[in-house]
Image (cartoon, rainbow, N blue to C red; front, side, top):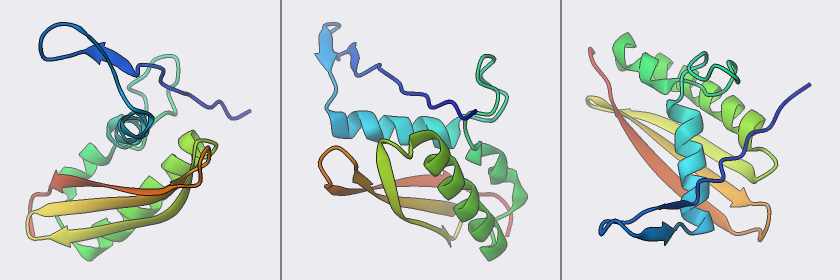
Length: 125
């Protein structure tokens, strides 16, 4: 049985120490970030959650790493956020010392397409 997880932490403390709300677009971006940067096994009650792209940083930057990251990211986002967003495209490119992960998705609640980019420093060549 596949368990879906939603983060309901759309409220946070603002820069002045007060209570603030996060927009749904920002909340979705934060959920994508959490899926990408949480390593499997990091969450005790949900050991399969995440795809752990940070561990890829030490593998050296290459086209092979970019291709492997693409499949890892796409599969993890589909598994954990598939009923919130439709993944239209995941593009992973290596640019000098960085991996750039671009996720293009459509929100299922309003059918608006969005995109978000994450930059990972990569070591080695």
